[in-house]
Length: 264
Image 1 (cartoon, helix red, strand yellow):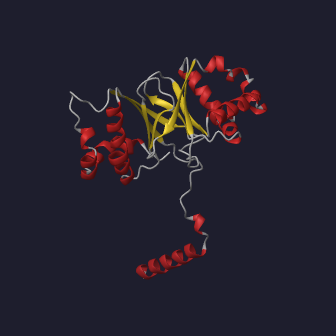
Image 2 (image 1 turned 90 degrees about the vertical axis):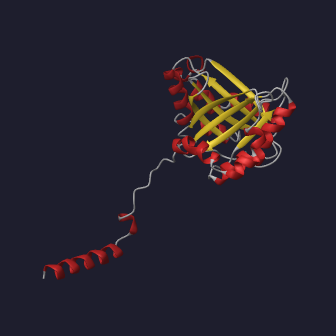
Image 3 (image 1 turned 30 degrees about the vertical axis):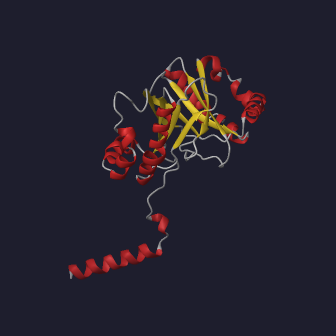
């Protein structure tokens, strides 16, 4: 009897579940997208041979292997107007810290990667592939949790770093971007932002870094002129707690152009 009662209850419960809206049983969805992590690398190079070697590595080995691991939209850039041998800048996006932590192990297990990147990976000390790599780990802003790709075509990119006098100043500047509407202004004025992020490991901390893109230098100049005159920007920047003199101690910028194989 007890077994028949149990089966009857189970059948009725299953039928009720089938009649009720699926949302009753669905897992609640988070309103916020996961923030991505970015590795920003800068390769110091001494000559054209090193640049060719590093570029060949990214084009033929690193980017294909990263894509096989589900890491998309890898950007590789050279300086727009280098004073000497160009620095090479790479932007590698990760869905999580775990993906960042495990990627080198996975690449080392990828035989196609090892074969395609052999000249770079096994470059001798007497003829290194590069002078040095400076690498930073960034965390995407809540207001722009992932990379946004601009339209394909001839473009220039501006990579900007805002250094802060303190961690508190950095947090306030991020609040200005995420909550006070500064990212929205960039979008509305058609800066086509690629990413905004906080440097969590790297040089010159505390700082934030972001990338915007333009058709050319003339468009760059006009966009920033429009930004400075924008009524909403003037309103936000006039709030005493958001004054740049309190939040930003140094601005560094570099103009870049994408390589032919860059995915950004």
